[in-house]
Amino acid sequence: MYRAEFYKIMKTKGTKRLILLTMIASAIVALLPHYHSFDEIIRGMGETAHVFTLFAAIMIATHENGRGTLKNVVSSGMKRSSIYYAKLKIAIVAAIFFYLIDAAITMAIGLLFFGYPITMGIAAILANVFFHLLIVVLGAMLYYAAASFIADPIWSVMACLAYFLFAAKALADVTKRFSLPIKLDSYVLGGISPYDIMKAGPMEAVSILVNVAIVLIIVLFVPVLMGKRDLR
Image (cartoon, rainbow, N blue to C red; front, side, top):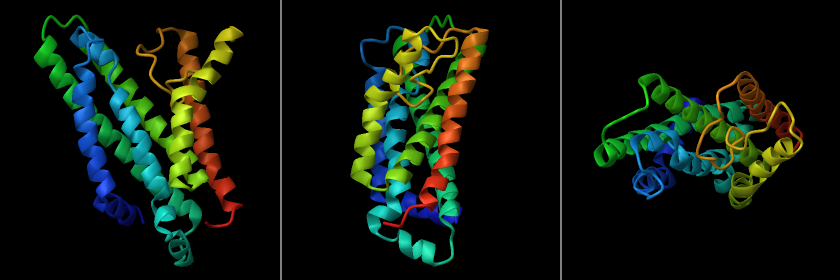
């Protein structure tokens, strides 16, 4: 199932266009004037991949719905939950792929145009790289789950973009306004990047784990809701 779905997604024109757009956008974003050093580029890495992963996840989730072939797949004996998790794996692979493209282009431009000296240590660079990779993968999982539930490609794009640009930050602002010890972080919850990651500290680490758990619970709960709904 996984290989068949992966082959179908990779053969679509939309996938190839997204890859090309990601490469172009990554280069443009890295050259924007708000970056002044290699270190700043590393801290802001993943912004482009985060956006294009959103569209990739929606495309993966709604591919069968848009073509009207989901009923045929289910009638062949495949469980809806099996289809959901097979496509979820593809969404995760796609997120990693788009992030690697973004990271490679961003770091290359950072070295080429900003060069040395690099004040950030290897450990700090790797920490930023892997943190932003985690964010992109979590975002892909969340948008995939949302699009799978909504089922319609257009409404999925509208809803996910609204959440990405506005709703995630609004949720995070609630915990900040009431000064709660465990904070919702818009970036970890799939929202737009605040540019810098959380400051290191015990409570920040706990907050990140709580945010990750929220995303995983949502992703795992969606198949339960889908199982109670008629096919479209």
